[in-house]
Length: 65
Image 1 (tube, one colour):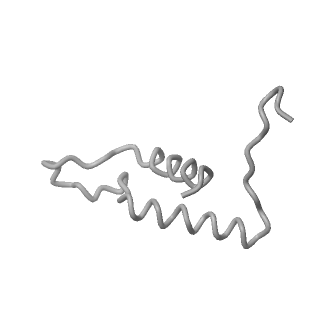
Image 2 (tube, rainbow, N blue to C red):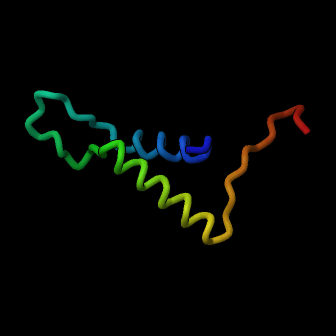
C-alpha cells in the first residue's frame, strides 16, 4: 500500500479500539475489524476518491519547495 493508504488504514484501525484476545468469547464485537477487512475498506476508499477526481498529496513542510 502507498503511504496514503497506510495512513487511511491506520485511521480505520484506530477507530476500532477494542481488539480481540485469544480467550475473549465475544471476539466478534462491533468494535473490532479484521486486518483484511481494514485493507479492503481502505482500498475501496482510495478507489472512490480517485474515481471522483480527488488526490491525496503530502503537504510540503516549512522550508521545502
